[in-house]
Amino acid sequence: MPALPRSFYNRPTVDVARDLLGKTLVHGETSGRIIETEAYLGLADLAAHASRGLTPRTRVIFGPPGHAYVYLIYGMHECLNVIAEPAGTPGCVLIRALTPLTGLDLMRQRRHGQKDLTGGPGKLTRALAITRALNATDLTRGPLRILDAPTQGHIQVTPRIGITQCTDWPLRFLLTDRTNSIPSTPASNQPGT
View 1 (cartoon, helix red, strand yellow):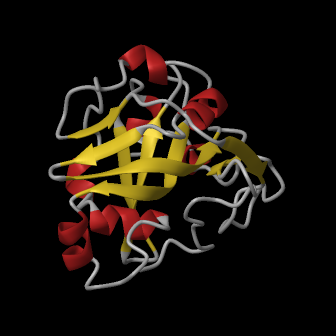
View 2: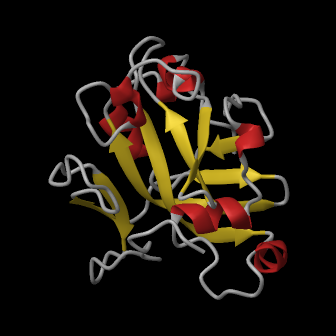
């Protein structure tokens, strides 16, 4: 499967967040199917890092679409975001959960034998060895890629979780099982390990 092209990311953040569901995130020998995302809408969204304006930390969010924004939260968990929107318009999508596909033994080793390998943003970055060294990586051709794949299942929309601002905005998207509307691998409220 090919990597998603830049045009996929050069669209409204909410559309990118929904359409990332079912796609395959790949880093090295490990990969997983994206099953949960959250959209962050820029300057007017007080839960978004970009709402603080252009800073050295947020520069990548204001840059061209299709790049990774990787940051540290709580001083211990790294989180992966995907940049959406045209350059100059901040928007990003937090990858909240995956269903593991390849490299499971390596993921288990990195997660120290934990059963839930990729059910939260901090868990999936540890399992796939995604660190801040990958911040600003081009997802269309870099070592970290998102591959096209069909979306199978239903999309459930809820308010975002684990934030304190704009908590009622329906910007969390989950790929659910067709029969019971339960997320394939629900992410916890926190990005923890």
